[in-house]
Length: 420
Image (tube, rainbow, N blue to C red):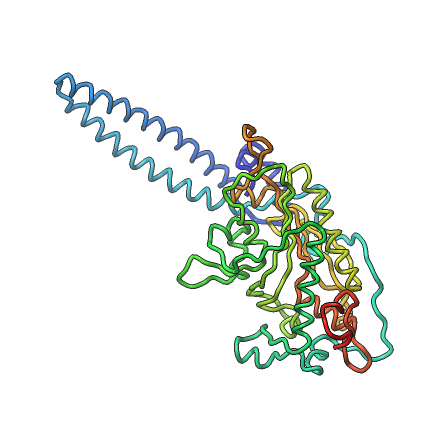
């Protein structure tokens, strides 16, 4: 969430951010609710003060043997007024809290302004799209011809957009995860396997809940949600804590399955393993000092780029526009891998700086000395590898004339063969 003081004192900045994001939001109502709740706070505090004074007067009169009935009647009236006022304050406060949690994050000045992904800006490219002297296939045909994926039985067992990985593709999937953990470990990241389900407070600390209703799975009858990414659980890991500033930045490598409804996707994405309800991912998640978070953001992007360079997968880096930017992020880079079978670049990495948006919601602060005032730490996240999408890129870019798949050199040490 944003600093309420910023919303209160500089609403024109918030209005511009909302226009740039192309987001409809009743800011006037939020500002009005904020003013009303603060006014009610003052009134309830004053009424409590009066009650305390009247209570002291009643005690004094009783002690002196003086009839306290009129004052007791006054106390009863004050109690009724306070009860009504507190109920009204609670209602206004609840409405305000619910609404303030839906205000998007501020946008970094370098983000291109535009209504949608058409305004995204290409930053750079790496690698050359492979050329083939044979008719190429997409990953669906390749995997089915090699009996590496069973979509039909998965649909029977679980429904659309699920899959059975088989044989050597299972090993390649595990190789990607192992390589990613080792890769981040060499760069100072601590591997974390988080809970795969978290409660509502934790989930709402990481996301704007209303925007994820069509994405996140809820466990019926329990205060639990399946994580859509380890980012959600890692964000909540230090909730309500004051971190030691000398230990920052804290860099985590989150290793987990991810569960997503993926509502609204269409076309050939519904087939194969590119857009699915369940997949494995290794995630970069960093807690950083505010003055260091933008440099950390660039470092995380560099780490992700180096990973795909090691895998020899051609890709490009895109800076997302204001209209395509997630509401929690202040700035996001996507890495899009070349998919030869689709003759297109497709997203495989999202790298974001969320500033103090998540940590303010989760009350994660830091200080360097025990007597110092605390500050909100900044949180950043980036995919390193979502394995199914990277498997798609490998299958399509490394396909051979005889219908097999060459294994990238970086992964061969994790497998027992160089060809699948």
